[in-house]
Amino acid sequence: MNICIIGLGYIGLPTAAMFSTHGHKVLGVDINKKVIDALNQGKVIIEEPYLEEMVNDAVKGGTLKASEKPDEADAFIICVPTPIRADKTADLSYVENAARMIIPYLKKGNIVILESTSPPGTTRDFLGSIFSHAGFIPGEDIYLAYCPERVLPGRILIELKENSRVVGGINEESARVVKELYKSFVEGEIYTSEATTAEMCKLMENTYRDVNIALANELAMLCEKMRVNAWDVIKFANKHPRVNLHMPGPGVGGHCIAVDPWFIVEKQPEIAKIITLARDTNDGMPQHVLGRIEALTSHIEGKKKILILGVTYKPDVDDMRESPIIELIGQLKKEGVYNTVIVDKHVDYEGSKDNDLYEAAKNAHLIVLAVNHSEYKNIDFARLKEAMNSPKVLDTRNFWDRDIVEQAGLEYHLLGCGRNQF
Ligand code: SAJ
Image (cartoon, rainbow, N blue to C red; front, side, top):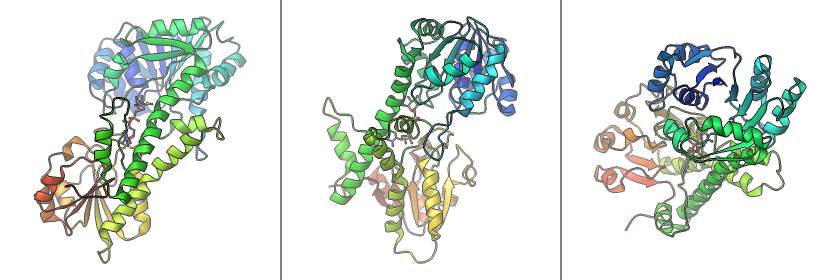
């Protein structure tokens, strides 16, 4: 098939790479000229294992190219962002623009698929009415379906292939043809359903995770007060065959889990009480970490130097969207008594990419392990201690070994732990 993919971001680009290396011809469309130029040279501008090799193969083989404009195709796939507005409702303007952009190229018998995470009703009501106004009867003249991605950044290409998927059609026939299309590279099961059910399913997967992380964060705060180690509680509770407590941390980031639950809340705020509370709990974690930092540095007069390790929303990615660490840094700055230095080779945030860990640790009063990037696992704690003014670390991820850190002469503090070990 000729496939036109609108939006070449974290999902659109890997999806384009997949289809174009599995028997289809793909035209990728983006508004960012840098993305287009890179792709046409077989390159990518995001960090994702195997992606560049795959894109390069497809471009060389003539099955993938990028442009600023769509063209006629058999199938159109919309993979544009659905940002959240200040009032916590979904901004569907990119989805709307993408739909309007393809209308001049749309023909009877074409397939239109939405992949972007969207509030329930977006495919059937929102997109359906845009195409109806343009003279196409969805389900009769064109196939229309929602087919959400479920991939984890860092494992996108593996999960695109292996994960199961749900396809929600606005009618049975739409779901069936879209399932056939995705079968070209998906090895997992593809389930078919109705469009709004599939939208709700996508939102609920991430909401499930958000609510469980909120529970873990609440546990962490309880344990700090009750002189218990939350990480031990979680480890042992999870030995129960039907318990799967998640991990606490400095907050929830990324464009999915920190955002998607609001797309349910916007539709039914009166009913979605647990979902709202979980969001608020997770959004409150940077404030909680700030409280720990204040307590650990309260004895220091004057400006306190805090070294933050990691600023991305999770380990080993170059994505800072909705990162709770950015929020934490903002709160530290607002206090006016902290001098924050950030180290993170994955992204450039206030010089984070070029900062050397041991140089940055010079005269620091506290090191906060904010993101558990793999390169922070085996660091020279003795060297850090030598460089610091007050030898303390706050581990927000349970990433370091207390014994190793303490043997190097550093004081070890752990988020969620209100008690020393035996
Ligand atoms: N986090 C915790 N505790 C945990 C797990 C995660 O605090 O126990 C935090 C992380 O530090 C991070 C955030 O949650 O800040 C989200 O990270 P993540 O790795 O859980 O998820 P994402 O946002 O990278 O990807 C999610 C995935 N959804 C689920 O696992 C249900 C992925 O499968 C989805 O495709 C993706 O959202 C998406 O695009 O919707």
